[in-house]
Length: 568
Image 1 (cartoon, rainbow, N blue to C red):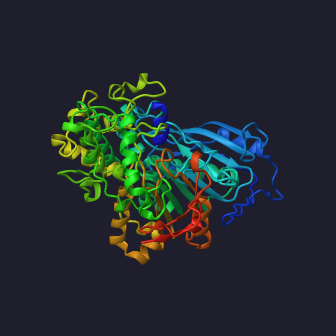
Image 2: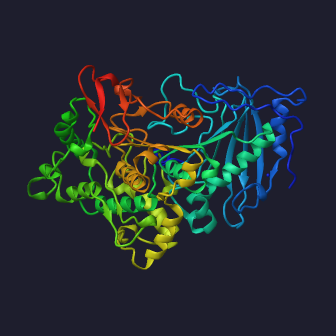
Image 3: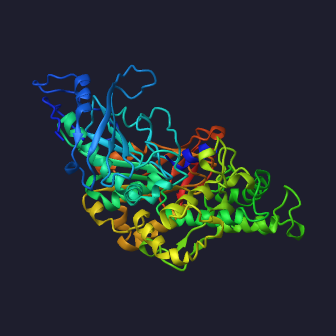
């Protein structure tokens, strides 16, 4: 489950062998015209029969590259192309479970969708947040900065890709986090489910088609973006391409930063209401919107925006209403905007967790999203009893990780936890960070096998600071140099882009085609255009600029990408 899904709540013994084998031809390029439907002359089974046969498959532990007790199939159902709501053509929907070594750990539940007309390739869908549900593998992967796509773009399954995903190793209300008390469940969530699910899907594809994946891609956003980085960093032999959108690369440090913000927001008088936030946002936009040359509701170069929130201070620093901010509320704003600096190292030597661009256009109070909660009174709630609009994700997420993954103490009080200095829990914090964080700069194996990575982030992300991806890119640049890095990684920052929705510019483009063309044809991403899907401004376009460039207005229609140039 992605961060946005969590927020919306705030609102295989014997191996079956196919007797007849499909002739599978992998097709390259962006059209994804499936080329695997022809059967050999010896083929005797229909898609219905071949799908039904998967019901009896048992995946042995030996087929999975990490320790498990094998996997079993719960159901294998052929979905007709004409089935109600199906826009992806005929496919076999396989649901199953990967069984743990420690039987007190939960199973990893998965879905693998096998199109009757296969293009030879696969797309592994990432999850997000603390997961807990299987991603919608019949829909769109997080290949853009939104949860929709531009008109005419087909789902991966409709293009003939095998699609797959898992719940990362637990079911249920993910904000509770109690599954993290089990070591194997923690390791699965941290990244092992990526490898295990891939290997099961590969096994099923061999049974169904008689061939392995010709190319395998991982696409995810948020926590799923972190999983994409895990795929490239830890399992490079399995993946040819990755799209990591707004990835939670420093996920444990990110949770600490969220917890730090919660402490400020939930301190006496520190909570900022939507009404007060609108005053802050309006002041920022008035000062910084036109700095890129166009007054269009988007701050295209946040680095040039230097807004001082003290200009909104209430007289005497005391809350006098919705037109100003008290000292306690200014402390919340400054906490959001500044980094968390620790006296210990997270994985890979990281000690600074960046702040958010709240003073450069990031909106924490969009009506669709309340990451800090609808009110101070409703920020801390029991997620098991929550309804459609509960709590603060900034409280619930670190609360789950600190209580269950680190302290393993359900009674720990997050409001008194020292995020800069965890004291006796420092060593445990570092161990969990080593498991969970996807901050390694050793991408050599992925690079050397020809792997390609698209890293992208919205400048106005209200859950994962854009600076986190900038910092990761900078460390990779220091490790590889520009030429070597550009040969396998492209990094895009989207001004006004948020965490899927809630920003000023909800950008979408056909990222899967771009990635596939890069992997299969050697056509690197360039001169891309991204389209705004935000309802009030839907259809306007901007150039998708490769970092460190940003789209500067040069004249003409402010809604057309041709009126902007990528500038340093």
